[in-house]
Image 1 (cartoon, rainbow, N blue to C red):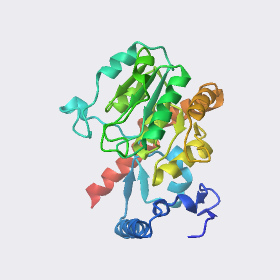
Image 2 (image 1 turned 30 degrees about the vertical axis):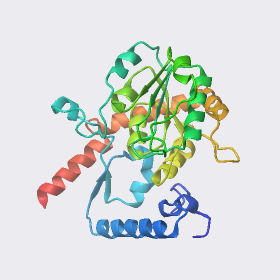
Image 3 (image 1 turned 90 degrees about the vertical axis):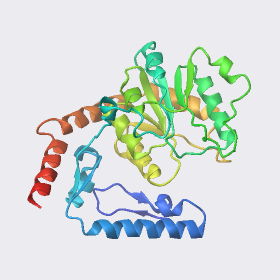
Length: 295
């Protein structure tokens, strides 16, 4: 596909064709497979009279105006913990002690770092991120999955890193993310910008530092940085590496940007209103329930 910017209508967010999901693999066979998969999904949903999604009207209003059959009923949250097994919907066991650790830190002081369940780093980039978190000098909570690098062994931290950050850094295999993002100690979120993580941070008023990996994450980054303006993007160097200096400087830039912090809180307020009685998501859910009853 020719590299260009497309826009479905003047109100919708422009889309760079280079970040379309099937254009990101640099392998013709995989790109064709992903394209066909998405076409199949589109055909499967084209006959649907109504589709519900985990979003809310304020953050994607032009989309829902263009496609009124899509009903945003979010932001949704995981309520399984009160019903039994708290790990029912998780890939790994959560480190619940990290909440106690957060309780010992001041408001807006901790950097939360998590890249979802799929993102893979090469070990050089992993180490550069570690050194960047050390460089910041602030407390941080970093979710480090056992399979986070593209090696068959666990991630390799820089020599002496764990010892140097022992008083302010905590690395966990998996976290209770919704509780973490809700915690007042969290100051910002270094994220892969997956939609679930995005909506969870928006719901809690947490500003972003965007580090997308693939697929819709790059488009979500555009929403975060250009439409909602509640975050900043990291910029790789000429070798494609996000340096420790880039990590350190962007965290500092974000935390002193009062406008980003204010917009993050405003989106949180809109999300709260949307699920209250009379809010847009509340009405849409009732509309969907009525539709099911009638059909």
